[in-house]
Length: 300
Image (tube, rainbow, N blue to C red; front, side, top):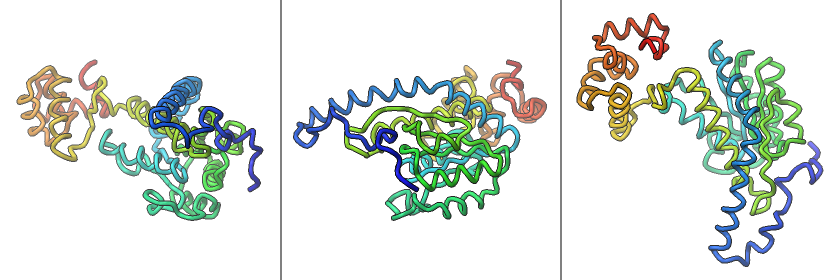
């Protein structure tokens, strides 16, 4: 694929503010980076309508049996893998609901895999294995907007009638033409030329935070601002679960722990028990009648 004109790929341009980076003191470097990072929130703010549209698409797709599938290469792929991996323990979702494909596969998570991001064939193979449906949402993440692996994956997704979303910092690039929803956070050239793990990476991480958190909140995996489906992966999280139940119900930690044990460590059932004064059977009946909608089960 021919390279894009330089003016279209700001990720490859030099940042005039950091021309003498190699001659700066440590304090000068970190001050410069801090000033540059302030541009990230502003760039993100300009894309909030597009991000909200993407959240709505994810929610709609999942409600109809679809999945959220991230696609990326290099730093972008690693952030996608991280966000997908955090969803099951945070929101209690199946690992199949939010997935990530990174060019080069598992070895690329911790190291560079030569030529991986340039492989069109691998992208098509990797996504074909997912057996996409029209209810799936495929999000391509590419700072440059030209990564062949991501572009090929989005083309395949379009052929399967899946909803396509692109996250980039270069809006006037091929990825924009392949996405139904374009999220283009223009943060400008990096302090270290071409190192998109910096501002571009930060803004990508922030967008992913918004997409998954907002979608899961809209899907009912959050009660108030509490993680009601969090999984007890260690002692710290087990303690957090008890605090969440106590906070949400207004009851004591001991009462929360007792209800949790009675409910077989089902947080939703335990909360209904605590708030409505029901036994386990009554709480589960309420949840079943509400089809799992916690607010409805609680009469709120």
